Amino acid sequence: MKRGRSITQTESSTYLNEALAIWVRDLRSEFRTRYAVNAIIMFAVTTLVAVSFSIGSFRIADDEKSFLYAVLLWIILVFSALSGLSRSFVKEQEAGTIDTLKLSARPQAVFLGKLFFNLTLLASLELIIVPVFVLLMRYPIAHPVPFVANVVIAGLGLGAGTTIVAAMIAQASTRGALFSALSFPLLLPLMIMAIKGCEQASVRLGPVGWAEVRMAFAYLVIMVIVSLFLFPLIWEE
Amino acid sequence: MIYKILLALWMALIIVASFFYSEAAGGFPGETSRILFFHVPQAWIATLSFLLSMIGSAIYLKKRTVDADHFALSAAELGFLFCVLATVTGSIFAKATWGSFWNWDPRETSIVILLMIYGAYFALRSALADPDKKRLFSAAYSILAFATVPFLVFVVPRITTSLHPEDTMNPASPGMDPRTLKVFLGSLLAYTTLFVWMLRLKIRLLRVEDKRDREDL
Amino acid sequence: MKAGLGFVMAVNLIIWCGIAFYLFVLDRKISKLEKDR
Image (cartoon, rainbow over all chains, first blue to last red; front, top):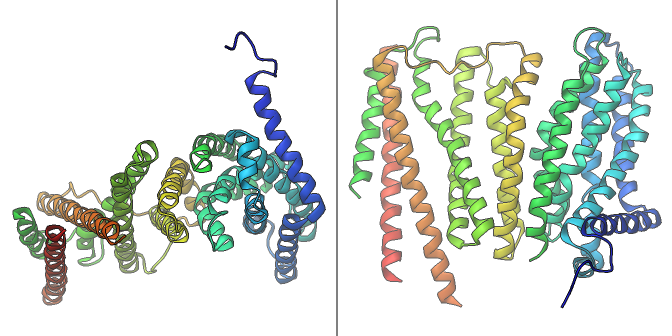
């Protein structure tokens, strides 16, 4: 016979606490092994070097740069992300800890925890690659604030769109390729928006890129909500 | 059974009519506008099919009935087929009208993205061995993909007009010429009926295979 | 141009007849399978 409030904290704060606990645990294990970070950064650096090397010596007009560089930047970011973001669930699968995870926290909390982890990876990726790209390619950015906003929000969107997919493919056999194949169509609208936004933000006159930031934010919100709804269904089977 | 024979005759009639009964539309080189009798219904069926597949997935997520999954899978397979047809016919039309096979204009881009979503759906299905998991995950993916569609609707026109400023494919309003309109609507009816027939065949096939698999155990 | 049109139409018709025939055969096969079980 239960009455009144339970001794533990209210529903919602335990929920978030569980998510944070998972996040911290993943951060710690990643810090030790650096598996995902290595994959992502290696890929990013390699592509960046390839791009810089092949394009660097060409004289490209400034007004053409804005579009071309936006495309290249996001290709580097998206594909680097795809090479490492599946790690969050695949490592649980490999270590055999999926069942423990299912018992230790509620599904939405698991999803949020993993999402936070992926977002951390993405934030690190962007923090390193974007400035290097801008400097190396001499990217002319007329409006830095919307540019950064675009990069940040769309980066979050990348995580939002892929975390649940990572959960789906963790148990399949052809994980890496499957993860990319599944994620890419989902990320395409976001990628297009991000490219457009960065392009706008680097052009001197005309619109500045905030519309794209808003749309990227809408994408982020919708994908998180839909994922939160779907994740429990695929997690508890 | 009757409707299938009628369909066969009707489609044959439409094919003949599309070449000799209606006039080729002005504004397009030569007789190329005739392809729209086939291309537009195919594209229409491809998107309709995607919608149906998504609905089937939603029902499966809710009720977990195998029938819902059969429906979703069949609609996806047919949708994919018609999507390929629409892309190919569209490409042929593009070559004849604008001189190049591929231009990334809004409609072309959307149909390719649809193609990729289908491809991902099938890849997911084939990668999962356990049937329950397969049905569940692919249904979930279907919903996820559908969530991105509204963004495509907004985003695709914005980027492609700035990339390639060119005449995007106007759905040449067949309302221009009464004969053309008749043939077009007739073709739409024919393709829809064809789709229904093929869908039912596919679902029946899946059911029979299921029964046989269960009886073999 | 009209001459070529006849050719294209004939090709189309042949393709369609092939498809319709294939579908009828498939339909028959499935019906048999359904009846057997």
